[in-house]
Amino acid sequence: MDMNRLKQQIGFLVEIDKLKSIYRRAVLVDRSRHENDAEHSWHLAMMALILHEHANDPGVDLLRVVKMVLIHDIVEIDAGDVSAYDLAGQQDKQVQELKAAHRLFGMLPEEQKTEMFELWQEFEERSTPSSQFAAALDRLAPLLHNYHTEGATWKEHGITLDMVMTRNAQIGQGSEALWQFAQELIRDAVEKEYLPLD
Image (cartoon, rainbow, N blue to C red):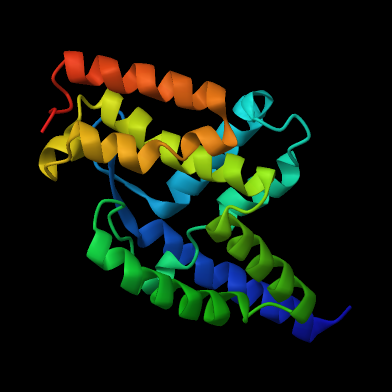
């Protein structure tokens, strides 16, 4: 047994426990509190298991999607959570997240570091069917939260229909079926006045 390798792996696992303390803007469906990043990642992994049949590419690599959604927000341990609608913050976010990815994945043994970094980059670039589907799930989850909390964070942050449609159109790259469902949900949210037109 390589004790040094094991210590590196355990060190990484202890470090990423901090993900449980990074709170997102999304409110839990029961409205008791904000969701944390670890819960978000777990929920996306469950969504991948349940919804993968709806991916545009029937050959999407489910294990790869699950890995991507489990690690995609680990960088927020260092970089924090930036609102998807904060366009100015998004530019700085990319720089901070890249730095965080190097530090955090750099804690692992070399081949695991490389695998995690490449998976994270693939998710960020959305260049493969698997990453496009993973990203579609990442966009769909907040929509579900907002719909089932009657637009809690949309209302809190002044989010409008135009903003939601623009932000979430990428769902269709990974799953036309999920994008169709999302659009129906958004239309219903507008009708129920969860989401303002402007």
